[in-house]
Amino acid sequence: MPRKLELEALEAELAAIKIILAEAKRINDAVGMIQYEQRKKELELEIATINDAKANFASLALFFGGKPVIGSRGIAADFAGRALKGFQEIISKKYAKTELGLLGERGKIPLKDYTSLMVTGVTHGSFGFLLDELDDQTVMFDTALKETVIETIDIINSAAALDDNIFESAAENIDPRTLIALKDFFFDLDSNAATLRLVDDMHDFSLDEEAVHRARIRTENTKINEEDKEKEGILIGFLPIHRRFEIRLADGEIISGSVTKEAVEQYSSKYMEKKCIAKVKERTVTPLNRPSRIVYRLLEFVALGLKQNDK
Image 1 (cartoon, rainbow, N blue to C red):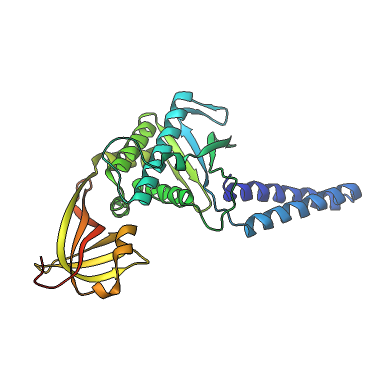
Image 2 (cartoon, helix red, strand yellow):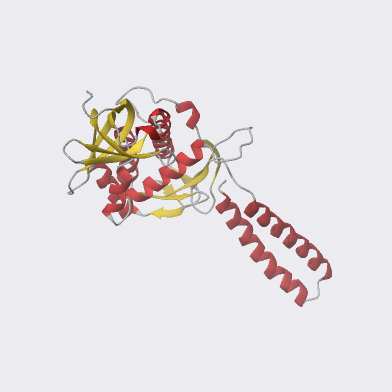
């Protein structure tokens, strides 16, 4: 369960206990005062422990509302199955793209077995599901899956944002297959008049029917085309830690973008201001009723450190 939801439940109980404890003191209920004071201390300790702990594994809650849901009593089984499958599909494709730097146009999703979230419970108040990454190992830092889940939630929120520019910026880092998964997810929510609330350790936002419809229209009308190309020019900027590059082409145009792990391993500072031939993925993002944007990702260097007249 996300820490945010755990804290909300504990803080609500603590507030109730404080009211009862105050009443016990008012009527001089000695036994009640001892019991409620003890429970108050237990809750305060639990809250402090959760606040001090660092959750390194993915954990989130999906709350659904609207037509497929009857309060907190139930949710249409076919809708729930599709919604969870659709959300997992986005996670799996985003994870594969992040880890591998590319994702084939079709076929089996690589590394899918590493992205499985488990349904560990249902939410209270309105109907939804608790999803967790379960692993017996202890880790010092956030897992790759947790980072992917955080990024995915950001993308879902951006797709429904009032400002078109927010999703346009996010779309620069979305591959075509992930975009299709997003489109299918929002289509299913919208066509069933469903609403969504997403909660994890960093987020808590709700998408009403209008926001869901807006996200569906955006994802359906955004086009992403990718093509691998070789670019020849002068390497004028490279940040290995932040994985960014800049190359000045022969015509003076400067292209820039993100960099794969493979390209970082090839790089050395001695190649700066030297001629290079780079294999890049050129992504053209065309939003709804907006001009196209071209985004580059440096896949690998075909040649580095060439002299100006080298081919």
